[in-house]
Image (cartoon, rainbow, N blue to C red; front, side, top):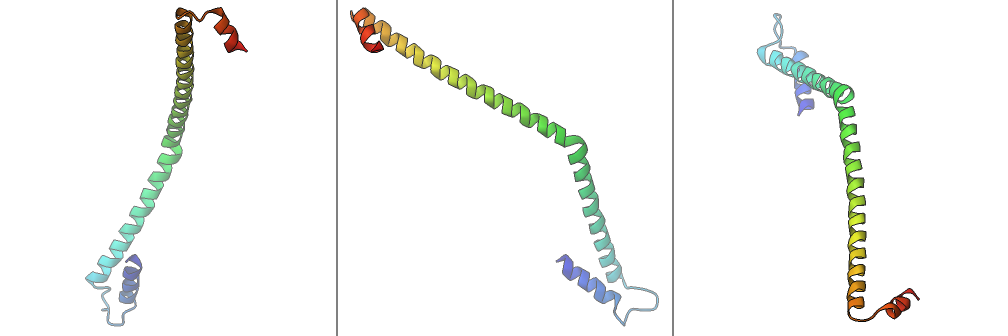
Amino acid sequence: MEQDLAIKVEDFASDERSSILGPDYLTMFATLFMSMTTWLMVSMGVVYMILGMACMQPLYERMENDHRQKMLEWRREMKEEKEFKRQKEEYKEYETDRNQGRGEWYDDIQDA
């Protein structure tokens, strides 16, 4: 679309029929539109680059590191909780066996 517009602007600029007073309104509008669009794109790129380099990159890195540390802590806690539940179940089973009369000899069988 922009390439077509640029071609039309070029055609208007090179047109033999243009008056000696200068380009007509359509040519001026197309030229103004292209210039404004170009400067808007350039300025948005500069703003994006400044925000990325000066302000937001350290903030993003800090947030990413905090999240990574929280995830590592959560995984460690889940692993500890799982191990604690396993030990609790083993102890519960052991106590049940001892209460049912399977005493010391049962412990020796499990150790072997």
